[in-house]
Image (cartoon, rainbow, N blue to C red):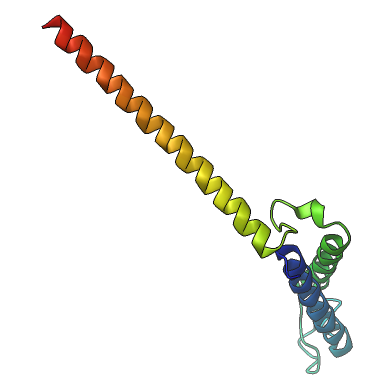
Amino acid sequence: MNTPAAAAHRILLGTGLGLLVISGLLFSMGFLPPENCNSEASSCIPTNSFGWLIPIFSGIFIFSGLLIWKKPEFFENIFPNIDEEKRKGNIEELLLEEHLEDSKSSSAWTSLEKKLLIEKFEEE
């Protein structure tokens, strides 16, 4: 069963794990933690604090993916945990209700116009 919640779980978890691998590479290459280099050191590459955003976002994505997996109702409004047939039925039901409301409003306008025409005719 492929629901939007399951797809979001896989996407967020995969993105988080990918960012975690990138964070590991940054640590092993010496780009994290940030360094300020002197002009004399030719092997030093200056880095700034924005590099910490990659491991932070990695943790956020992994946490969100696991949260959707454990408690799919937590993000129910964004990623519903219902299959395609139920979603299609819900949308068709909403469209039917909207169509019925439109038909009621058009019949109300028709009856109002009819009353106004009758009143106008009686005045003349």
